[in-house]
Amino acid sequence: MNLRPLPAIALLALAAVPMWVHADSREMPASAMPPAYVQECGSCHMAFPPGMLPARSWTRLMAGLDKHYGTDAALDEPTRRAIDAWLQAHAGTSKRVREEPPQDRITRSAWFERKHREVAPEVWKRPAVNSRAHCSACHTRADQGDFDDDRVRIPK
Image (cartoon, rainbow, N blue to C red):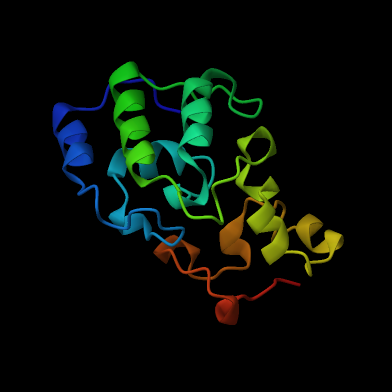
C-alpha cells in the first residue's frame, strides 16, 4: 500500500461521491467507487463492493490495516479516515450481510458460502482461480459490479 498522503483533490473527490449512490449494494461497479479506495485496496485484491460486509466488519478491517491478513496495508491517516467513512456509509445492512463473518472475510460469510456451495474445492486451487477472493476469475464482469450467476465462467 502507498503510505504517501493523497493530494487534497483526491480526498475531496472521495468525499464528493454521493452517499446515496449504490447504498447497501453488493453490486457496485469500480467506476462508482472513490479512486482512493480502488487504488489502495484494489492494488492487492479486487476493490470489493462495500455492501458485501456490515459496517462493524469494515471498521475492524480499517483499524487493522497494519496487519491485514498477514500483510501491512497501512495508509496515511487522512486516507484511512476517508475510505473508512465511505465504507461505513455504504456498508451492507440487508438481512443477507447483517451477520459479521468469521475474521471479517467476505469469502467466509454465510451468503458467500451459500452462493458458492456447488463449487468443488479443487476449483479454488486452479491456477486461473487461485483464491476464493479472486472474484473476477469466474465473475467476468465483477469489475462492473455484476455478479450475476448467468455470466459465471469457471476457468479450466
